[in-house]
Length: 536
Image (cartoon, rainbow, N blue to C red; front, side):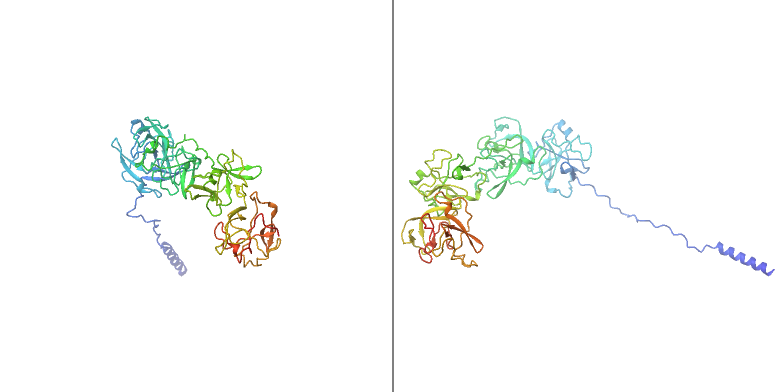
């Protein structure tokens, strides 16, 4: 009986224990994020946006990404799209408050009051429009419609416009520069300033601007860094030229200019100055600029090789007495040897502009020089290709681009200031001798022996005073014989020789034509060299 009661007691205890829930109460799930009681609304898109278009690059759109356009007839800070038909196809864009995307400058935007009483937003002076046939975001169907509508871009350098030409004489002109009413297409910069060519210019050649730019205010050169251009224009038609250190834009080879008298956006007054067509506008119908006529040519002569001629093929000459950057041909000499001068040089291929210069002659005239040598004609040359002036008097030589040496005749003036004759006695008179093409005198050394340099130290420590002549011999004046020249090795360097004489410069000969070395250390120790020099 006790066991029955014990079993009953245990059963009741187990049932009571099972009925009690000792597990923790379930937790309420926590929210992932706590709502902001004062949420910030998404910012409104800018009223003018900068979109990336696969065909056009950066383009302007409205806040809904619809493309905006320029009308190239809007040259005068007004809208020329005024008719119902035009506005039906090209609705105006206007926002009272302009906000812009990064990459756009708010200062480029403004508002104009249209003739119909509406307002319109402009960008860089160009009123902005939509195109009614653009049905969706990204459409650019309005570009180049009728060659006057273009996608609005922030990076145009130029614009292609169509407007009435009105000269400085207040006369209306047509595209052929006859008087008349009607629009003409032409290129302007992005600010609407008209660009002109100059009729006397030639391909990539500015024949107007002065070296000191003294006439630039009247017809300033167009210094424009070309970026994007309207689709009607071809980028390959543009280039640049250097104009006295400044960069001028060209179109089809024509250097481009502004007209200083164009005071307002859209002016094109230059078309009548000084007469219609002298300063034409440029457009897609503009012909290529003519190739410039060469003023100095490089001709092939059967005997003399490459020679310099003028534009008509007439030979040019050096006068070997012109050793001092001046002309020694004066008075009656000029009858036989007229001077050559060209203000604007146009050079044949193979000639370097840096080799040419202009000198002011003692008679007040100007003369063109080549590598320091004034250039002349020979009056006895009767036609193109004649070279009868070469070696006249042993002082006149055909002008060549590849001379290594020149044969000159001038007064010897020693380092002591004394005048010397060819026998190194004191006296006044002309002496023949050899120089390099730059007019630097070449000497021999009395103590040298045939093809042997007995002066130069092995470490070249005395080379500054009497430098060896390291000249690669090419062409020489016809009075000289190439067989008389040779070379020797001097401690690993190559020295030119003449009739066995090693050739030197004199360090203190600072200027072209100096021959001071003839008196150092005494007259004749370092002689000049000429065709009368006795071979070693």
